Image (tube, rainbow, N blue to C red; front, side):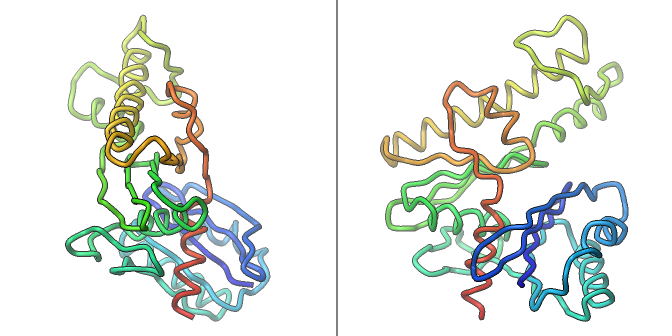
Length: 247
């Protein structure tokens, strides 16, 4: 069994690979707590894997915590995957391929493997990212914007009278400040996604598949005019492909 992990800024996600089939999915919030404690609770019951492969965008401390836990508990060092110039037929569009986040690169690979091109990946988490891939598998670039919680916290931190609207349910317009913030950040995120996808579609054609992934994907799907495809395990699917390339 190979254990795959995606360490984001807020959550760690994982899956088990047996005979190149993913299963045993899990996720846990690690932001604001000890990643070692999170892993101890979530991974200690797992059987010992033959290999541990991860993408990490949460920084050196998270990487060190994962490595420490895996060495202590499984007697294995994790293999951290990085973005590359290409993976199979998928070509990284960044001028410096190493600057593309490893999670975004994995999602692009997973998307093209599953659907071919053209395909657009919209990741909705701490940040909202959009990446496009053409019919030939060339990554055309992407954008990065604040996610819903990040926008909400930024407003609360930059103003004297606006509270953090965590937990508020968004409508179109709010009748109090907290609800108005929830409405505003939701509409900002939904508008960004719809406008960007519309313009990419104009470039690549109406046959483009649009995939939503990330912790806020299901919520934002409910706020969008168009119904896109939810792909919650897209990064891990790409990690599996990347891991096989490095075998």
